[in-house]
Length: 159
Image (cartoon, rainbow, N blue to C red):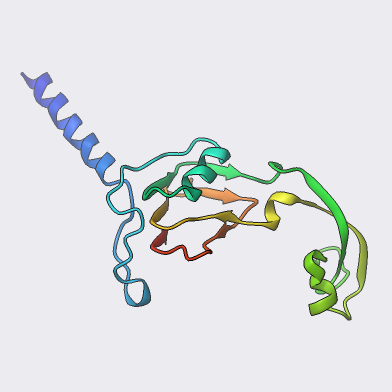
């Protein structure tokens, strides 16, 4: 009988932990009332492709990130020209001249003839409406790409 009680208690605790996966707390001010993926069953992507698919589909989703999703080398590299708007010392970041950024915004910056960079970082992952993106502890990380909430997307929570 003790064994059965223990199993029942463990199952109840596990069910409670699983149902608690998702957004915690509530927003104030501008974000008040945002529900994200709401009460959708949490999904746990295991690959970068799966994460991109969940973020970009039309389903309401609670997306739990349980690891580092590293996009750094997922789309290869590219080499192009650019500039050094923040200086030319070894620790200074270079800028690529995508869409004539250097030409239009930093015309006096020293030019750089060849910059090799990871293509994944140029355009963020599209996030559609009704998504909750929740990192689990310190393990939920997206590396090498950002997020793009555009084209009228709304009701998004990132936690």
